[in-house]
Length: 264
Image 1 (cartoon, rainbow, N blue to C red):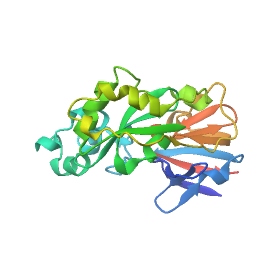
Image 2: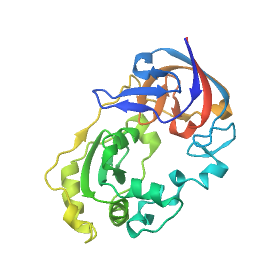
Image 3: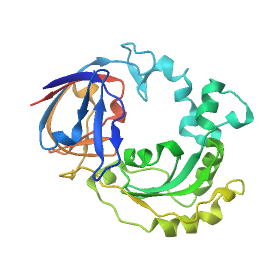
């Protein structure tokens, strides 16, 4: 069976284990059903996720001109503390910025390769944790806008990490932590503006991923550079496909690429 489409972030269902889907324009693939099967990938071209033209992908699935123009790729996406919609200040598109920034946001702790602090819209819990490959996570603060979440994250980064080591996460070299204790320990460092929104009585969420075999020495795959790859799918974790030969493919890192997938 053969599929062809532009790669976008895998869609997920919060089940035990997580259920993963590659969604194309007119079709989708349930990846859990393909574990232990041989898959053939062929690079076909590009399709910017915004303008949909066959132009080289610059970052985040967007061509260069779109990346520097559209609000979905503005700096406040990666740095929530730069959000200004609550001040009625426009960056690229105030209507879009208000829609995204002026809604409940969560500051959380997630443990994927190590404990890290992060920010996401409340509507993206637990999807954000799944995408990061976190096996456990907990909410710390729920605030009414992205700016408050951003300044809280910045404050807590002095005491806990904010990055995931993708190799450690994929090798499953992880240690379980008591996230409730970490949450309570970090409370004192939350900025005064966000302290009233501290969450005191929740428990951590545990996440199971569909992995039959973890890689010992992960080797990253880019479809544009490789052009062609055949491998046996052994697992999915975060936004990564894991293959028997220790090759791993970050679907987020390949967004905007058009590929043909043949199930052998």
